[in-house]
Image 1 (cartoon, rainbow, N blue to C red):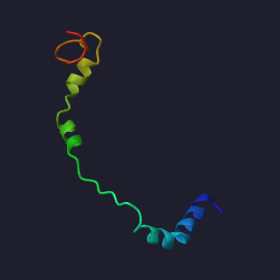
Image 2 (tube, one colour):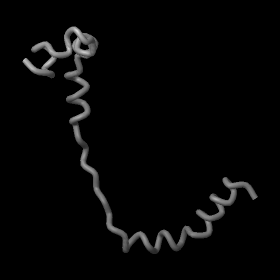
Image 3 (tube, rainbow, N blue to C red):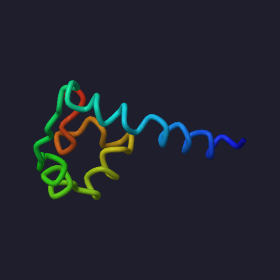
Image 4 (tube, helix red, strand yellow):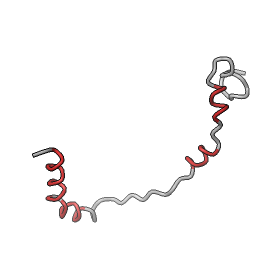
Length: 67
């Protein structure tokens, strides 16, 4: 028996048990978070390239390093 068919058989044979246990498990609810959209909209590719060079990594434009 292949691993895939064994896995499928296990899912089929334990289906009723998993459905019965679902009422006793804690339910998690996820709320949408727009932080990733905010980061993507504020991504500056030019700044990322310039600030990755050793000449400019400590410049005030890049916001890292000692000034």
